[in-house]
Amino acid sequence: MIRDDRVLLGYKKTGFGKGNWLGIGGKVEKDESLETAAIRELKEEISIESPELIKTAELFFYFPQKPTWSQQVHVFLVRSWKGEPQETEEIRPVWAKMRDLPFTQMWDDAKFWLPKILTGQKISGIFTFDNDLKVIKHELNENKNSLF
Image 1 (cartoon, rainbow, N blue to C red):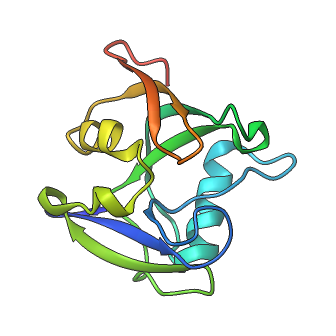
Image 2 (image 1 turned 90 degrees about the horizontal axis):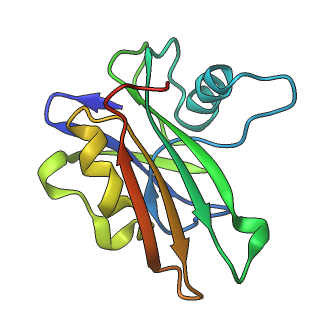
């Protein structure tokens, strides 16, 4: 979510990614579209409704030592919505200035792709992590002729 020169980050309080600042999201449920899942997750995790979704990235995260963690992620930006973000059991939302994002407290991959989508780029990427959850290899492609 973007408002003026700020982006909404969530402090993950439970589950996968606990202790990191990250975007709001989750898994797609059976018979659910990507967009429907994103809308549901925003409501469940920070209590906002009717978001206007803009697909900006498709990312693949590969964890060779923990293959069950590997996943494909679809990233959407949200510029308009109803309601104000609220803290839930899983997430504490905080507005951060785009120029001061806490990359050292985020998943290691964010520093590579997040600045790009915040400037309006549409991208795809692959990230490989080591045992310490640091990116050891990555590839980013800007989608000038968007496939989204």
